[in-house]
Image (cartoon, rainbow over all chains, first blue to last red; front, side, top):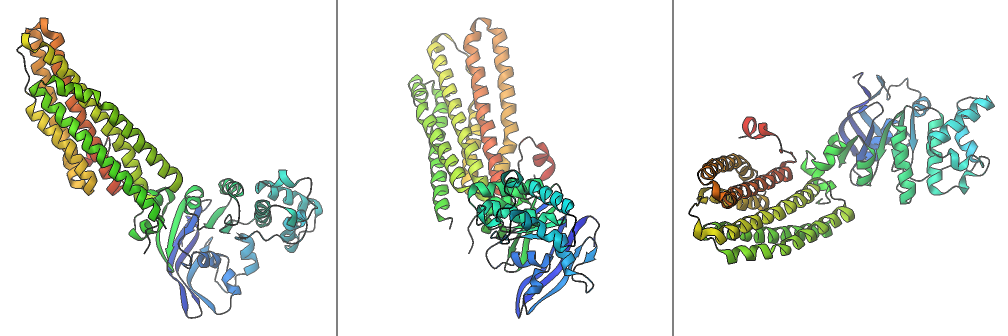
Length: 253
Length: 226
C-alpha cells in the first residue's frame, strides 16, 4: 500500500474455473496517468482490466486472489459496494453500446440511477459530460434524438460522456477505438489526452501504435503474466525484456 | 506477420553495405593518391562522386518508406535510424575523399617546383582502419569494436595536431609557398574528418545494439565501460 499510487494491484491471480488466466500480476497506477495494457489475444489484459471494477464478478466460476487497492481500500474487501466501486471506476467497451434512448437520456441515466432528481443539475451535468467527451458541439441541437442515429465514433464518445457523468476517478477502456475509422479513432485518442488531466486512464488496445500514442506507461502481458511495464517511449524504443521486443516487432514464436 | 518488414530491412542493409564498400574503395584510392600524387586517379574520384550521392538519396528514400509504411519499433526502429545516420556519414566520407583528391590534384600540378612533402602514412593507416572497422562493427553489431574505434579518434586528432605544427613551420620558412602548403594542411583536416565520421558510425552501432546515445558523452568512454 502506497499513498503515491492511485491504484495498486499486488500478486493478482485470476481463475476462470480451473484455468488460471492471471498469474501473480503486480502493477501500480499513478493518478492522472494513462497506462496501456498490450499483449496477444488471451494474454489476460482484458481480464486484468475487468478485475479493476469487479466486472468479472458477473462471470460464474471465477475467482481472484491477491489484492487490488484503490485509494488505500482493497476493492475485494467484503464491505465494498460494487455499484459504488463501478461509479468510481467507469468503463468504456470495445463496441459503442448506447441505450436505445435519446442522447440526453443516455448521459442522464447514470445520474438518475444515482438518485439525482434536480432537472437543472442533471441538464448541467449532461452538458458538462458531453463537452468533456468532445461531443457537445455536434449534438447540442438534437439532444432529444435517438442515440442510435449517431455515427459509431459519436456513439463511442457518447458512451465516454455517459461514463464521465457519474464523475468517476478511473476510466477503464477496453479497445475503445477498435471498431472505429481512423478519424473517429483520432478523436478518441485526442480525447484521452484531454481526459488525463482529470482522470486516471487504463486502456487495453491491440493497436500498438495507439498504445504508443496515447499512454504514459505501457504494460505488456503474455500468457497471464505481466512481462514488462515501462515508460511508453522506453518500451517502444528500447524494451528491457526480450519477449517484449519480440512481440512489439512482430517476431513472436 | 512482419516477414515483409524483415525483407525490407534486409534490402536496406544490403544497400548500405554496397554503398559502404564503394566509399571504402574511394577512401582507399584517395589515400593512395596522396603518396603517388596521381592526378588521374584523383580526377576519377572527383568525377565519380555523383554515383554515391544518388545511392545515398535512394537509401534514404527506402528508409522513409519503411518508417511510413511499417512504423517499426524497438530494434527495427533503432536499425532504421542508425541506417539513416550512417548513410549520411558515408556520403560525407565520400565527400572527404573528393576533397583529398582535389588537394592531390593541386599538389601534383605544382610538384616540380616544390620539394615539401608531409608523410601522412601513419594517419592514413589509422583513419582507414577506423573507417573500415566501423562498418565491420555495424555488420557484426560489435559494440567492443565500436568502442575501440571511438577511442582511436583522439590518436588521429593528435596526428592532425602534429601535422598542423609541421606545416605551420614550413609556412613560416617558405612564405612564398603558402598556397601550396595549404593543400597539405587541408589533407590532414580531411583525414581527420573521415575519422570523425567513422566515430559517428561507431556511436550509431552502440545505439543500435544497446539503445544508448553515447554521442557527446566522454564519460561513456573514460569513466564507463572502457
